[in-house]
Length: 148
Image (cartoon, rainbow, N blue to C red; front, side, top):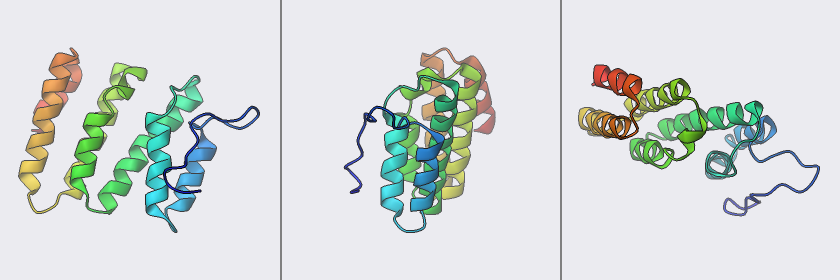
């Protein structure tokens, strides 16, 4: 299966793309093909809207794992891009869970920082604060401001 050949709609009887089995498959691919693992995780995160709580939890774990993979590759820019790209997906989650996900991604950026450590962290915090203000997510805004 090529990295870009991920089928978005499962066939009848197959598990949903957003499932623990798919997450396990992506984790198994990490050892042999990180790019394909990232593509599979991205398809889980940005694919179909989860219909069950289990699928929502699997999607959340896929977000965390994607951040960790980018961090392990020292790719802070990809983590920052993920925090921006994921915003429409965060509408599926309760506000408290969204705050946890965003804070975790900020921590991941901190771990993955490249040659400009402080500026990268400041940029992502300011961006998240502006987004939290627009979305009226006061709790998240306060938590990120504290981090800044």
